[in-house]
Image 1 (cartoon, rainbow, N blue to C red):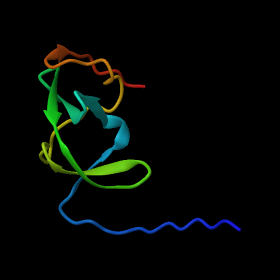
Image 2: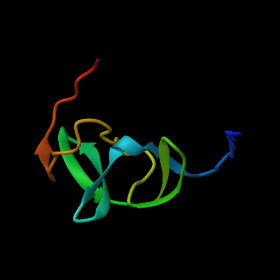
Image 3: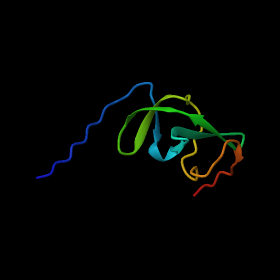
Image 4: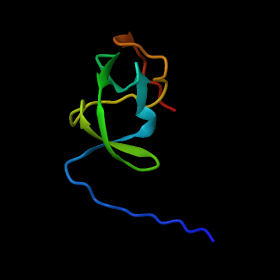
Length: 85
């Protein structure tokens, strides 16, 4: 017999991002942010997680624009173009 349990918990004052936004660089989690059409990497500290998201405890601030796709091969200060699908 199998059972699936889903627990939802409200988290106040937390930055929550999709797991796809986090990539590893030298074994450390990095999230790329977009500033003036360039990608900048930010070392982050992740906190709580579920199947699709992480909370970020260090490395990002409210209002940062994060890159969630096409980030696997990005480097620091790479020029980027926003593509709307």
